[in-house]
Length: 220
Length: 107
Picture 1 (tube, rainbow over the protein chains, first blue to last red):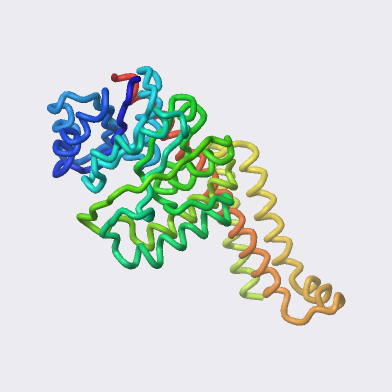
Picture 2 (picture 1 turned 60 degrees about the vertical axis):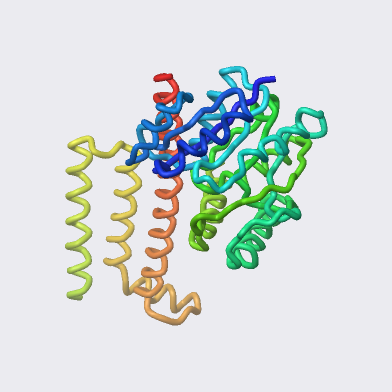
């Protein structure tokens, strides 16, 4: 079974080499999608010997994930893992994420920061942004999951073929959940640990996601 | 009266510009027609502002016709901005697709 990890990266020269080294033992192939970084991200990823796809223009994390996923499918991946380049996820938890797919218990597995394992989530995110994101998911997509914005997920081949990320920015998390539910994909959440080195998505980013989702709904 | 003349001069300026854009083929026939109708309607509204005032009063609304015109223009502008935003979103999507094709072709 070929497991491919897709890592979207934008200006991640500080972390990319370490992330690749940590992920490598758990997967057969790594695809780094460099989203037009201004630093040495692409060069460092290439030095690590992984597949590097470079966007000529910065298109956002959602766009990078779709590029990487399409490439992984073309390279006959059986399971595709989405993993962040900022060193916040724990590579050893890839085993937990792919296990339900290998066992046939799920077609898509989503990492959740709210299922027991301790993450040093900033309180604003825990008590303000995440509840709001859950509410948005419920209103827009009728989805009720513990973690509305986790970027750590695994999809089996058939599921990855059905999912088409059209939201280039951060709204892709909600869009993926929506498509999973729309396509009646068997979804499972597993606990993950996230170590925050920086704040990440701010409240304004959350509002941007809502705006993107509304526009996406209209232009469809 | 002076205000009406000023408004008409502005409209004439935009109409001349519109015909210039059409001549240089900077806009297509459909866009030209939409803007031509828009500016002509605006000119008609300015010329017959008193009659519009009377019509508004006859219909039982209070307030000057210019206020109603302002509201209509604001609504039209909001609609135009909204349409532009949607067009930009579609263009954005196409740019992403193109970027993806180019990036993957290199691998």
